[in-house]
Image (cartoon, rainbow, N blue to C red; front, side):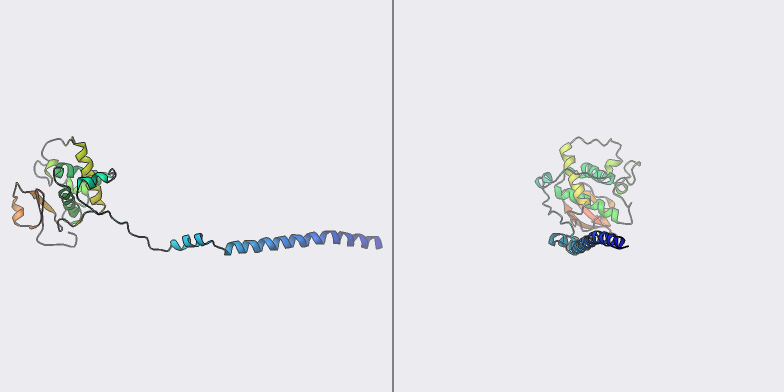
Amino acid sequence: MLRYILAVATVAATVLPSVSVAEREATDSAERELVTRSELPGQKFRDYLGLFKPRKEPVLQKVSYSKDWLDQLPSATGDENFKCLAEALYFEARGESVRGQFAVAEVILNRVKSSRFPNSLCGVIKQGTGKKYQCQFTYTCDGQKEVIREKRAYERVSKVARAAIDGVGVGLTEGATHYHTKAVRPSWSRVYKETARIGVHIFYRHNYRTASN
């Protein structure tokens, strides 16, 4: 019996210290984990706070309305509506000054915003196409094939189109939705209000303003 009691005591003395060490290690590990979770380095904390800061609106580049300014811009790209506007500027205003090209682009964009016209750039530009000389933009219904031969001019008007779509260079025509060259005087020009004269074009808007034009 005495030998049995001595054997049990020996086993207990051997096992219990191991359990105690294991428990201490588990406790130390848990404490380290809690400390790690509660500590947030300064940089990460600033990044975290940054999530709640209001995002700044992009700052639009100032327009100088010059070819040198256009040439410094990156090549312009975009969707089908962008291509429609670039094409319209090429055939309608490539010989105009840069300011004049922005003004023509503004008229087209003003039409998109108006409930009196189609609600897309391609829709506005191609309105009436198919009926000779009854379209809104003559080059789309004059019976001649649209061929872009002046690559440099097209690159520049493409940049104008991209900038105009992005909201650069607005406010030149005071809400105009119509224009014509100084060489002609259409009947509607006697009814609409003249808003600006830029280059070879005269710009107009309706005598009444709506919320969308």
